[in-house]
Image 1 (tube, protein in one colour):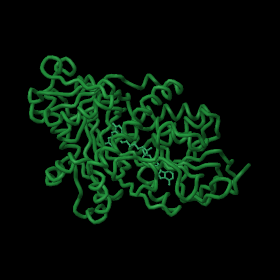
Image 2 (cartoon, rainbow, N blue to C red):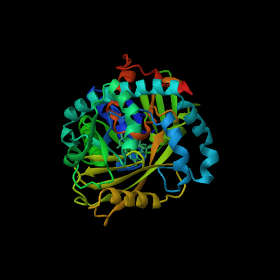
Image 3 (cartoon, rainbow, N blue to C red):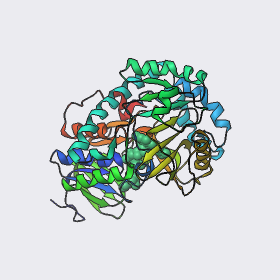
Length: 419
Ligand SMILES: Cc1cc2nc3c(=O)[nH]c(=O)nc-3n(C[C@H](O)[C@H](O)[C@H](O)COP(=O)(O)OP(=O)(O)OC[C@H]3O[C@@H](n4cnc5c(N)ncnc54)[C@H](O)[C@@H]3O)c2cc1C
C-alpha cells in the first residue's frame, strides 16, 4: 500500500529519532513489524547526543521531592547554581513549577518512587537483552558510579534516602578513606565520603550508542525518514502522520517520541501535556584529561563527570527556559571550575561545550501510554533526566501497547491523562 505522497505505509510510524524513538524502533522491528522512524534532524542529535551517558538504574528517587524543595531556594539565588530560572522565563514556567511542588508532597513521592523502581527494574533487564540482541553490549560499561560528599554531615543527611533505595533492592556501599581512593584515585581531600552504586552503568558515548542501535534497527528493516511531522490524524484503521512538506505517511500505529517537542504533536490531538524543556550544559574535555575510573556525581552541585571514549564529560545543571532562549555557557564553565577543584589533576584545556534540553515532566515520571484521543497513538516521552536509562524499558512497553499485550509493569503512573 502507498500513501497519497507515494510513501509506503508501515505498521508503526515513530516520530522522533532520539534514544527513546530509536530503541522503540529496534524493539518493534525485531518483533517483525514494518517501522518508519521520522526525524527532522540527524538522528540522536538532541539530548540523546550530549547527555552524561549513564544507565542510572539505581536512580529511583524522583527529582520532585521534599529534599529538592529544601535545596531549591538556595540554588535559585546563585545565577550559575544547579537550578536556574531566568527571570524572563518565570511566567511561562510557573504552571509547571506549581505541578512540580504538588508532586513533591510526601504521599506523591512514595507513589512516584515505586513507579520509577518498577520502570528502572524493567529497563535494567531490557537493556541487557536489547544490547545483546543488537550486538552493542560492548558499548556498555559495568563500572558503577560514586556519589561524593564534602563532609560527614552532608553524607549523614543523605542516609535516609539511601536507606529507602536499599529497601527497594538497590545495592549501596558507603565508602571513605582507602576504599574511596581505590575506587577513584586523585580526588581532592575535601571529598571525605562517597556512596558506591555498583548497578550504575555507563555507555562509551551516548551518541555512538544511539547510532549503533539505529544501525542495528535499520538492519532489521527500520526506514529512517528525514522529515518534520506536523500533526497526527488518527482514523478507524490507523493514523496518518501529516508531514510539514505536505506528504503523508499511513501507519497502523504512531508513536510520539519527540522528546520535549512532543508537547506540540500531542496538542494536534487536543492533549495538553506539561512536558517542558529542562536545559542542561556540559563540556567534553579530550580523552586523558583525567584518569577517571567511573562516573562521579556531586549531588550538592548538580553535576557529574563521566569517562567516555570521546572524552571526559563534565556537566549537568538544570535551567528552565524556552527552546529559543539564549544559551548561557557560563554554566558549563562554572561546573568545570568546580570539577577542577574536586579533581586537582584535571586538564581543562580543549573542551567542547554543549547545551541540550531534557524532556521533563513535573512529577519526574515519563508519559507512556495510549493517547486519550486514540488507541492508535502511543506516547513515549517526558523521561527528564533518565531518557537513556529508561529507553529499553520504554521500548518494551511501547511494543506491548502496539501489539495489544498486557504491559510488563503497571503503567498507570505514566498515563497521559494523569494531569
Ligand atoms: C546535560 C544532560 C545530561 C543527561 N544525562 C543523562 C544520563 O546520564 N542518563 C540518562 O538516562 N539521561 C540523561 N539525560 C536525559 C536524556 O538525555 C534525555 O532524557 C533523552 O535523551 C531523551 O530522549 P528522547 O528520545 O525522548 O528525546 P530527544 O533526544 O530530545 O529526541 C527527540 C527527537 O525528536 C525529534 N523531533 C521533535 N519533533 C519532531 C517532529 N515534529 N518531527 C520529526 N522529528 C521531531 C528531534 O529532532 C529529536 O531528535 C541528560 C540530559 C541532559 C540535558
